[in-house]
Image 1 (cartoon, one colour):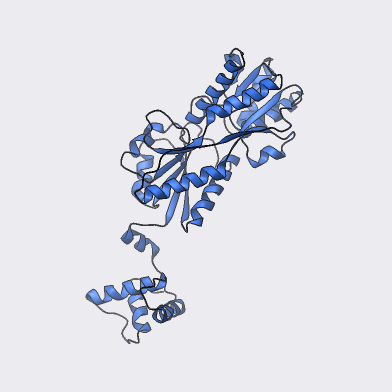
Image 2 (cartoon, rainbow, N blue to C red; image 1 turned 45 degrees about the horizontal axis):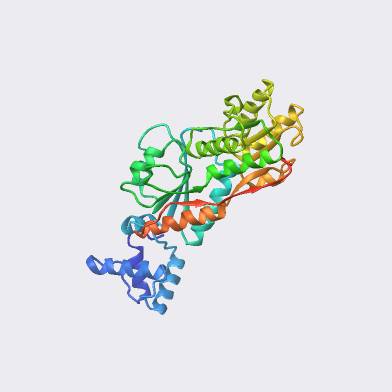
Length: 348
């Protein structure tokens, strides 16, 4: 396989020269000609392009993509990052992550870019700056803000090709695409109240940006229904299925009086159904359950899960559109993805 002088040799063979190496500017010109030909550049006449491609294939010549990327300062790759600061045990195999990554990958590859996936357990400062400085991607998409809002705000002052899936917050300088989490929480509670439920528990975290907004929607929904907020009905459940199930089982064991659950995510809602069933509580007869996300598993649970649906296809398209606009130096503002209540058997 040719390396440094492969392209010049390939070009010389294609135009009928015997020597494999030239020197100086002519060699550099030849190398550029071959690189352009192998990339299908129409500036190189088609007959010559075809000759160069045939010779390159015969001799095993390939373009050094790393060197090309370094020269052009362009990688044709988009980085997709999952930052985990507050929930370090969460896995990439989390159903929400899998669906969002898949949606983003579809949109990115449709534009003939590759995807570079990072899961970052945030334990020290400078993690995002190091990813940017490595220049392994032309732009970055983050799935979730975790507890890194200030880091994202600081980086966005100088690094523009960055778009985040998450909540929109006061004083935010980075571009974010996310759902109307407050409205989603209100929809969930209003549905449960309409179904005759009066003691509605909230399951999940309450401090990360999206969690805080859904919790706020829960509290607003209670107030709109004339129901008092009871801190005893707030259960801090982790995002993983096993940990959430344990937390909910402990809550049930306290003998708490509740007839409905609004969970931060579908994963937590499914954990709640499992824990309630194990405790001999019927869903929805004894306890109605509503989740948030509408992952694929939601429609296949027993009973099927009522949930607040986020339009992840819309969200992925908006994120990638905005990222490519920013990569081109164009302005791109934050956006909200619509939410919709999907009623299934877990609540009625």
